[in-house]
Length: 283
Image (tube, rainbow, N blue to C red; front, side, top):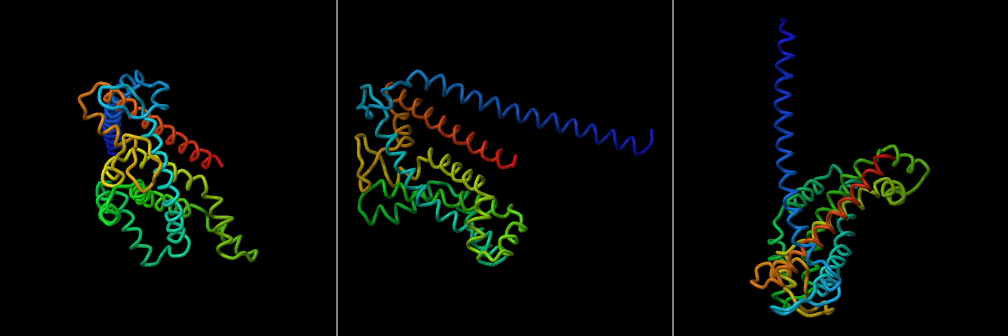
């Protein structure tokens, strides 16, 4: 056997071993994921009924639902997205379109990466010192601000990456017909990167929809219905946290059901984001 053939056989064996290890690792990860989802479906589906969406969180030992917690989560998530998305999109636009090679962009990207990987409890403590202590009470506004801070780095990174993928030839074509730069960005770059930017926003929603730590330090919780943004407000993650630690079976069942609702919502958003990305690639 020649040296080239021996080297080829050695590489094939190494490739087979590495492929087998990768398949085993992927299988282990999928097995644990299947066990978690299976347990969540088994425990959560039994408590999923109309009362969950129409009744308030109950007192200990009573039956009830999660209406106020679902409402609070939706309100704070919407406010967080409305506040965080424009900031993230504009920052990502500057980094990709105006200051791609500037020192400021390097600094902003470094800080954004830190925020992207920062524990959410740190954000909650920061907003607690920034808003809750000066205001003297917990509030839904503080909770929404904490969630918006978590939204910004996700949207910044996605917007910058998607705009960087837009071919410069498209920008040059818009500039060649005399369009101002902001018109080229709005009508050409944004349109080409729209599905990717929307995907980033959906991923940001998926991230903040299950955050518990920031809301514990900002919005706290409320067992009753409250639409006052300047007062403590219930949220699904915090309610799940509190009910899961309780000794009452009714609360534990609601915790499983709430966890199932969040999981299905996040999975739905992830699938929708994947479909948007797939459509973009098909084009």
